[in-house]
Length: 115
Length: 116
Image (cartoon, rainbow over all chains, first blue to last red; front, side, top):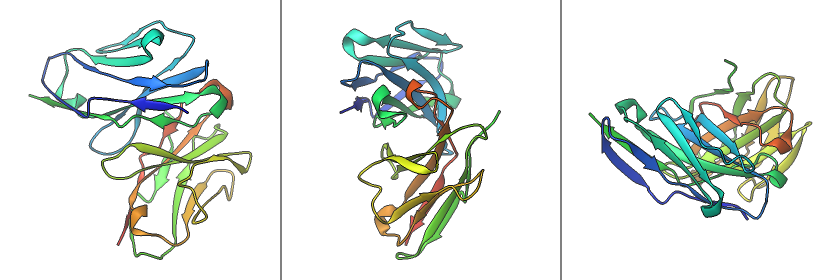
């Protein structure tokens, strides 16, 4: 069975600080996909990134970066120089190749960036 | 950029009433989903739909729930007799051709359902 754990329920930082959101997953499938979604106060789910299990290359997109470590089953998300607009709930999610596109979400991390 | 659209954005209904939530998936997508998020909790999978039939469903998706694709563009979720615990945000989502490739799932903005 697949499981996603986001141990940090809430993080508060001051603007311009760097912050890392942790995500640990469990799966028996050898092929799987990892995602991060952002949920701003307005409630929608905004796709940020998808990573395939066979691609451990880390990715950077502007102020966002992701560190995929298969050895520790982690897929952490770092925001560099955080801004107030980054305040949101961030969800990590997993889908297994043999389960189609059924996503299992973590519990989410609420990030508050203070000016 | 193409997007998934949902209506209504918010609905208040009395316990026991039927509710239909509507979704227009991205036009060239073939796989459709409903997810649910109870206030303050994680997002949970309800059902997936492909080729005019349910492909997977969770334990939450009991006989009170049904889905339908009545025409070429809409995808609906019906709750037959709502209960207080059905109060949640319901997200519609869709993805492209290849179910097994982990294609990105795009979510709509959600429909808040409040059962009173």
